[in-house]
Length: 451
Image 1 (cartoon, one colour):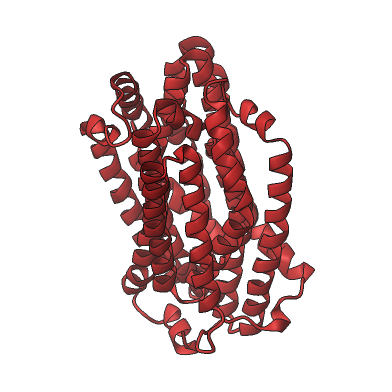
Image 2: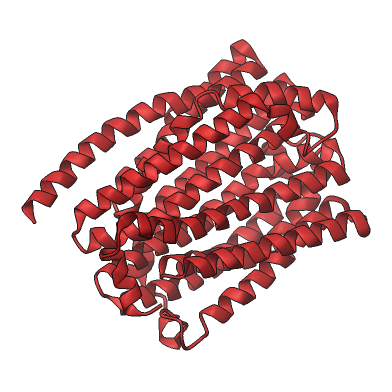
């Protein structure tokens, strides 16, 4: 990307930019969702019902790993976008170098600590005697590849925010296709069970990392590897981590939430209920990832224009993203309410598991359309570097509402209380987001009038 390409973020029409940046991000994030969905489908069809439940037990673990990766990747993406908006290319390079260093350090520490206490952690997350072997076999291999995952996802985020959204998209699609091929080969041909799925995931990410490393090694790349950037800079790292705390807390809270869901379902339903949540989580996550793709497309547009003091363009980008996100979650709501059995049947042939999943999916997605608005509103604060407000909004749904609901409602309503906790938390938290957003828009308008 040339410097002129970067400057187009401040001059091109917003809807053109959103299409240019969001479509590749949507494809990439949808592909990332399919990455996980393919694992679930192959495991459900090729290994069995208990394996699906075992995979669901690993979701908190995966969320925790993603929390550290997102803290670095998303934080760096925002820093790089703002630095480019300020014409500070050297600052953007320093941020990219620290992405690699931070991911290596965090990835190694997370791997060593997790492997040392693996069984205890999985039991804490809701594993039973029946599902623990499946969860253990899957997570061992995933954790051995954790360093690769962190570095790959961090650099892929930098690739997108530095003006190469299509390259980021193609890299993710490449990883998804390779992962699907490896999953089929290792599960159905070599009969490796759930271990084969994990191995396919790690190998696909290794190949994707090689593609990303090649991209940033080319002389023609706008931001590329230089020896001088690989120096730990405390100020840069602190800025990256401060902004990245918002998605970090989102994923940490998601870890805690899934743990409470799994344990609540284990107590009031059993392994099949955990398996049902695992299936539904994959289905819902597909639409959530599309919205996250929209958010990622909005982020460089909003970040650049906020850095360039073009606040009218900031608001235009936000409004267009909200409309698109609500449309996506509304489509998801209609599919999950009208055709739940057809979608769930992709994952399993077990009639009892299908029945439980169908009932739960209708409840979980009861007010799903508001989720798109809520996610974009939270991302606005993050994209302009308002870290404290972004962190509060990230914690809002899960810490303030969902976790208390998950603790209280199952005591009175059993598994039904677990299912209904989710839409109730979405509704209440959307009200809080709206109050903060209205106040922030007033501040934006006051700031705009001064310029």
